Length: 177
Image (cartoon, rainbow, N blue to C red; front, side):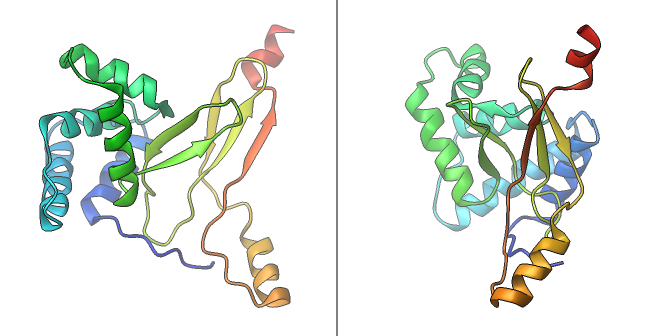
């Protein structure tokens, strides 16, 4: 498998793994992650404000979802009513620069975000998107490793990442027919 250059913390990877398996993200793991994000930002002389922390917590508390900026805004606005949508967008951009989150386009006209990669040497997971109900199912195996190797050999091209989105009808919608 071609290795991806990831810049995530060990504990950040651990929290992402816990969250993808349905963990709560509460307690020591979440607090440790928040502390490490704070320190990484401070190392670059960037403040980790209460609002930025609330945006991060929105992802940790909803890591089974692919949140849009508006959804993050609505989650944070409950706790900070004077929070602005522009602040959320700026925070999302900052978090993407540090690989805390990444953006995905599911073809619905809205950029969505999720926690960063779960493992240092792994590609991002893939997505199955239901065209009926809009549900998004994560596929946590690298379905394109053989293709990447072939591309590398035939074109002398090193694949550093890829995205795979498969559109179709989910089990729930098929059973409604």
